[in-house]
Amino acid sequence: MKKMWAGRTEARVDKIADSFNSSISFDSRMYEEDITGSIVHAKMLEKQGIISFEERLSIENGLKTILSDLQTGKLEISSSAEDIHMFVEEVLTERIGDAGKKLHTARSRNDQVALDVRLYTRKTAKEVIGKLKALIGVIKNRAEENLDAIMPGYTHLQHAQPILFSHHILAYAFMFLRDIGRLEDCIKRINISPIGSCALAGTTYDTDRFFEAQNLGFSEPCRNSMDGVSDRDFCVEFLSAASLIMPHLSRFSEELILWSSWEFAFIEMSDAYSTGSSIMPQKKNSDMAELCRGKTGRVYGSLVSLLTTLKGLPLAYNKDMQEDKEALFDASDTVKVSLEVFTGMFESLAVHKEAMMNAARKGFMNATDLADYLVGRGMAFRDAYKISGRIVSYCIVQGKILENLSLEEYKNFSVLFDESVYGAIDIKTCVERRTSYGGTSESSVREQIVYLEKVLKES
Ligand code: ARG
Image 1 (cartoon, protein in one colour):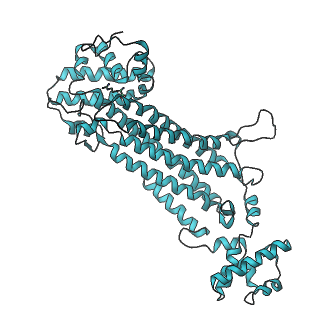
Image 2: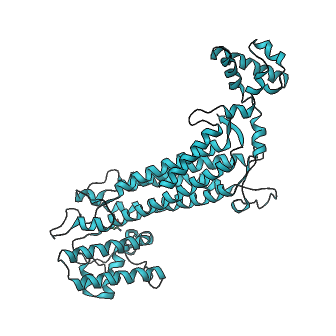
Image 3: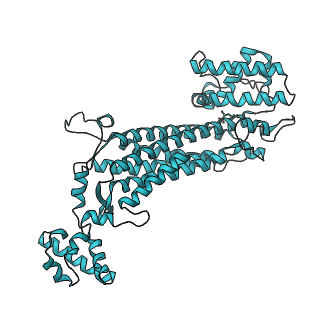
C-alpha cells in the first residue's frame, strides 16, 4: 500500500513496520478534537486569504459530515490508516476533492497532534474535575447524615483518640479538593495553543495564530514553535494529578475494605458494589474498593512511562512522542471509572454506628483526656501524662476500663481527682471538647461541611 507521503521514497513499507508505526488503533479516539482543530484551521486560512470562501465552506461541511458520520457509526475508522490525522484528511479529500488537499497548508502533523492532545487532555481534566466534585458532594452528604457516629481514630493503626466518622471521611474530601486545584492549575498550561508551530520552525504563510488560539478556547499561542511541537509537559502534569487522585482513592478504599471486615464491621457495602465467592457461600467481597486500590499502580506506570519517553529526546518532534497517548488515555480512563465506581459504592454503603461506638469504647482512647483533666486542675502535662499512663496499666492488670474505676482508685493516683473525672473522660465529651479549628467536635466538623458546600456551589 502506498503512503500519502510517497515522493521522497517509494513509500512501500514493510507490513510489520507499518503496523508498528501506526497509531490509529489508539489515537482514533481523538477524532472530534482533530476535526475541531481542522475546521478552525480552515477558517484561519480563509481569513488570511490562503484559501477561498468556497474552499473553506466545502472543507468545513466535509469535516462536519465526517464528524457526524463517525458519531452515528456510518463511517468506520479504517485500521489501515496511519493515524487519525491522515484518516480524516484522506476521507475528506475522497469526499470533496481538491479543496481537501489544501487543508494541510501551513500546518504539520506535528502541531496538529500537539493540538489534538491538548484539546483531549483539557476535556478529560474537566471531566475528572466534575467527577471529583460529585464525589466530594457525596462525602459531604454522608458526613452530614452521620454526624452522631463516633469511631476510633487511629495512629499506627492503634486506637488513638475518639473522632467523628464524619471527620474521618471529610479528610478525603479535602484531598479531592486539592486534586481539583491541581487539575485546574494544569489546565492553565494546557490552554496554550501549539497550532501554527507547523513542523518545527513556523511557516512562510501569513497565518494568524492568535485567531486559531482564540477560536479553540486557548488563552494564547505558544511563543516558540520548537517548544510548541515538542512540549508534553501538560500530559505529565495531568498524569501527575491523576497519580495523586489514585492514592487518595486507594487509601480510602483500603480503609473501607478494613472497615467492612468482620473484625471491624463499621460499614457494609451495598450488594450492588459487592461480589461473592465461587466456593465460600458466606463471602461478601469488596472487589470494587480493591480494584480502585489495585488500579493505582497502572496510573503511576503511565506517569513514569511518559517521563521516561521524554527523557533524552532532542528537539523537536520525534516519533517517540506517539507513545504519550496510550499512557494518557489509559490513565484518563482508569481515573474516571475508578472515581465513578467509588462514588456509587461510597454513596450506597451502610454505616454501622453502634459497632463504631463499641470499638471507640475500647483501647483507652480517653487516656489523653484523663491527662488533660489533671492539667486542668493545675498539674504539668508531662506529670499528668505519666499518671494517666500508670492508671491505664493498672486498668489492664485489673481488667477494667477508665470509665469504671472507682473514685477511690483514682484518688490513689492523685488527690486532684473528684467526681467530675467521669464526665471528662466520657467518649462523647472527648469528641465534643475538641473544638479547635479543624478539630473533630461536631461544631468544627459542621464548619468543614459548610466550607465544602460553599466551594462546590461557587465552582
Ligand atoms: N501519530 C503521530 C503521533 O501521534 C502524529 C504525528 C506524526 N508526525 C510525524 N512527523 N510523523 O505523534
